Image (cartoon, rainbow, N blue to C red; front, side):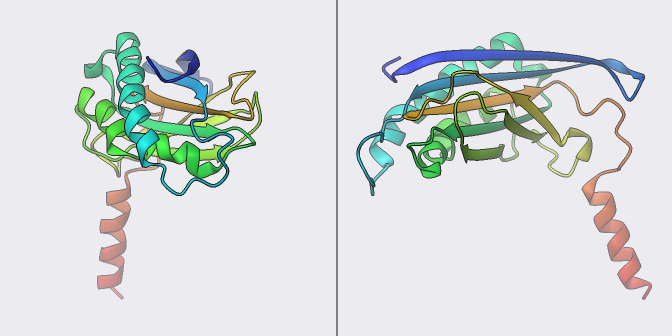
Length: 196
């Protein structure tokens, strides 16, 4: 890859017990993150981010997706999301630029037959910051059982002139969901209005 990627890290978590109660089946979460040189580092304010987005986002999207589905086959993915963090010398817009394009997200969405937008975070941090990658169900956006967050850390990244981008997936929702779906709330609230 001609992307100045310094490293790619993969995190796998298998959760068996939550709240002192064993899950019906283990819930696996996978995060794949790439650390690369910020392509806008040292340029001052750059008005046009598009050339680097077009150069990097499709390649990064394809590679991270390839690695994630190698660990968690596409048919197992139920929830997904993405995250980006720029080092302290960069703008949050630099991190956002590489993940908030269909040229990045569609690679992942199409590979796992998703229809929902990829939930996201974008931030500026120092090396070793704990990062959050939020997820939602890949097609049923109101399914609260799949409102998840993967947390991960790369101890030496992002450096001041680097960007860290990641995608994540889970093969299930929370172990013991008990709060119902968003659409149930909406229907109940509509009924309450009608009875007023």
